[in-house]
Amino acid sequence: MAQITISGMAWGGMSIVAAPLPNQQAIFGFGYQGVAGPGSMTNIVSNTGVVGNDVTGVGTARYALAGATYGSGLAIYGYGYDGSPNVSVTNKISSTGVVATDTTGVGTARAYLAATGYGTNKAMFAFGISGSAYYTGTTITNLVSNTGVVATDGAGAGTPRSGTAAAPYGTDTAIFGYGQNASTGAAISVTNLVTNVGVIGNDVTGVGTARYQLAATGYGTDKALFGYGYGPQSMTNKVSNTGVVATDTTGVGTARAGLGAAVYGYDKAIFGYGSAASLISNLVSNAGVVATDTVIVGTARNNIACTTFN
Image 1 (cartoon, helix red, strand yellow):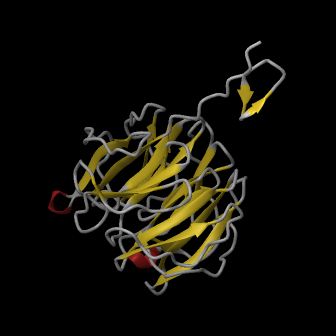
Image 2 (tube, helix red, strand yellow; image 1 turned 45 degrees about the vertical axis):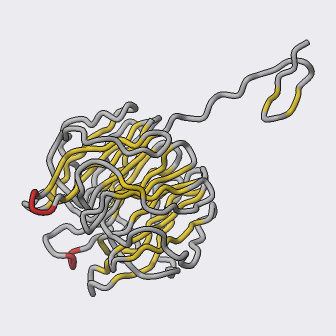
């Protein structure tokens, strides 16, 4: 009788074929194009980490927005700066990477915020500036249901700030980290853990170099990684599956800020675009090792958003 294995183990002459891993991709969207101003184009990242050409944008052209996954294979972009100055519109992203037209925003219009998935199928936006100056940073949160419904403003926790980054870790929790202090304008390195019901915890004394306009992503199925940032910087900080942030790892690739990052291929990640008109990406292995620069296509821009879909 034919033998089939389950996770490498033989079971009594009968076999079951394991389901394939999800075909996860990522999508970079919107951003600041320099003299051309805010953009709305997107670039899809394949499940092998290849960045595709520009896709004509949908929705309000803007930058300093954020994106996160929710539901099953879906994602959402929200908020940002369009020059007049901040907006609260959102744009849903389908499981095939199609970006929808604007949905009228809920909650305070703001920019330079962060977003992350949590609780296995929900998302949240948090922090950011609500005015035209960096010194108007907030702790506002907006939870996103598993059907993509954005809730009204919730009371946040921690230091009001902008330019922070966020990513999921563990099985259903998340972390926000670093940023620019709303009171002083100084870079900070505090972190805030998020429970599986979307509650943000108080400040945890930061580890590593204080910075802002950095990016964060999951990797390896249950860990996270902060990377790059204003300075510009290129170092990274790993986050364990229990939310412990490690000290700086010497940076790889071009130092820059205003970049985006997300998971692709189930357990790997990508950092891409950013300041200095950077048409580059840095792939991250499932062990959290960041690769050297790869030249990519598309329109160079910064203060971009990136998230996973499918």
